[in-house]
Length: 92
Image (cartoon, rainbow, N blue to C red):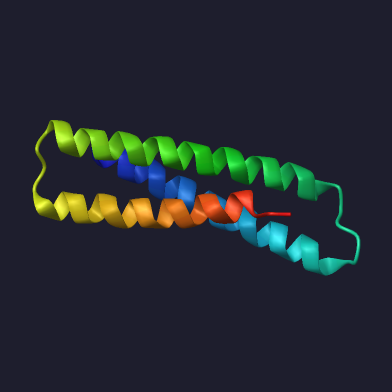
């Protein structure tokens, strides 16, 4: 299950970087540059991967009957992923 958290944390870091580049590009000029469409698409793909990884982590926790501490970590990951997915799909 550790690999799922490692990949998820790397994916969240990349998502944060992509979102910050998107926000900077949107505020840089009155008309958005062409790269904005690619950043929107990439952020949505990253959010989808995060949702899949979080689901896999939850399923793995359930299958191995993980202790409550692992469920807290998965719940925190799920909260951050839900927020990231909302941000990704509200990028307009």
